[in-house]
Image (cartoon, rainbow, N blue to C red; front, side, top):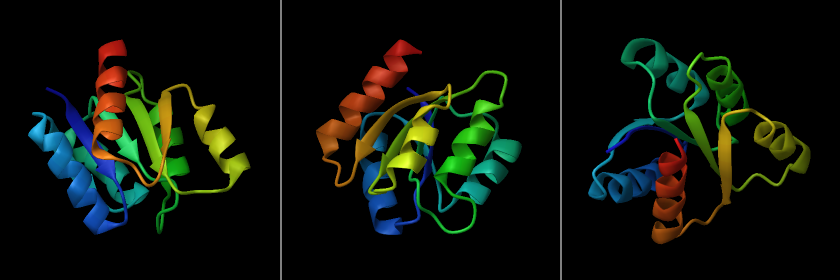
Length: 122
């Protein structure tokens, strides 16, 4: 299945998402902010999919999506957030590799269906 990088500062939620995705056969790496996501990218290579929150301490999801958008192969991105800042969300969704946005709270099947759809589109 897919190699997924999950950037989420809510550790409990990140573990739940990782469990759901792992049960579907995906290899999931957890990071707590955009800075860790970029570091993981440098040392572990590109994932097939980035799932990121928007509001995180340090480098946030917006900075992470911009950095991933500069990559040659541009892995697809799923934004999962409770962010209410519509301007920020518009900027993030305008990035070339952002495939979709899910509003928290997210149900298991909703996350899995969106991941499957994004991965099938390539």
